[in-house]
Image (tube, rainbow over all chains, first blue to last red):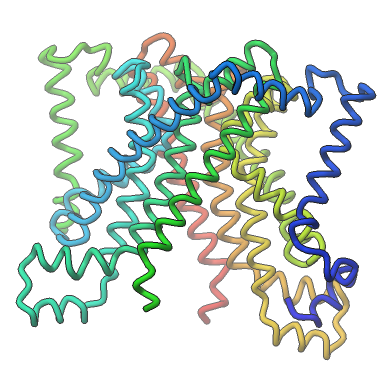
Length: 266
Length: 249
């Protein structure tokens, strides 16, 4: 925003011109934490509604100490990795096939659209009846969540490859395989990666959904367990871990994306 | 025309396999009921049970949560977009909280608000709130610097700057946010009914079908879920196009 706009719309800005952003950003959570502690200490809200912050920490500490936290996080991560891998590979294949061949798109797109129209959450009860509530259910649900955005973005990416690139490939008399690996795929990397990143975020959300509905282990189950026991501290701890893992997965994907695209700058 | 035919091949083949499998008893009809039975369940649900009432309950919940979340999101997004101070103070916290998968809030919300109507609406509201805040914020921040200078030269009041400059230039972005909010709110309505299974609704119907092992009911519910989602999306797209018509003109 320009200084003129600040002057008009947000004059108080100059109160904090030189304070580093990190400190400003921490002001609000700190104030909230203070208020939360005070509420717990003076009993403004019963602990069944809002446990003290240090209780949340100690609940997390207990879970970490007895190994439950690492186990549940590991199980959840493994499920996401497996389901995401299945969904992403299938999505890449279908996306590339539809992108390269309009015939394949004519046949497959309407069914795919209908399939994608029902949100992941809707498929869970159907799949529970079909495959039970075991590990295959989780993999299928997570794979579905990743599959849809990966397919759509891959299709769009392959279609958006400039025709000039393909013409150069034709001049070099590339065969189909060379065309795919040397021209189309490298050019389509950015949109495909956007799709993969969305896919991973969707996969993580789907994991939480499926573990809330049907699981006896994992981070989502930790939430269910806390809810049944009325342990809000455990629930809040689990939410914290779910947020941190989700954030880290997305950041990891962004880092890979940046690395893969380094050559574009050169 | 040829494309439409090609598109129909796979769905029709799927239906044929389904019908064949359930007719010949290759698959347990409890797992895969004949298409005809799903249709009969649909008619029975409309005529004898309260399918439309369930649908209406879900939609009403969806709309209330969507409206509350969208208006709250517009207010917060505008504040964050216009005030550099609010942005620096609050945006990092908002982005931090946003990292928690939205469904993970359900147990906490049901602790705080019970499992009744209030808790469901709060959850739907949260689902609609997030995309509206993000897109309003982004739209407000992208207002052209030159126009802001012009407004300053014309000594616009704050209200005028907001309504004549920031709001119109943020409109496309806000429309995207509201569109997303509509989709998220619908999914959240179903989610809230799954996990707080009290009262009527399509999500409750699906869960009940699963518990009683009535595949036809589950399929019917999912069909409705997809159909309503599709219609909401279509309506939002055409409204968005109308709203932004002036931009291309």
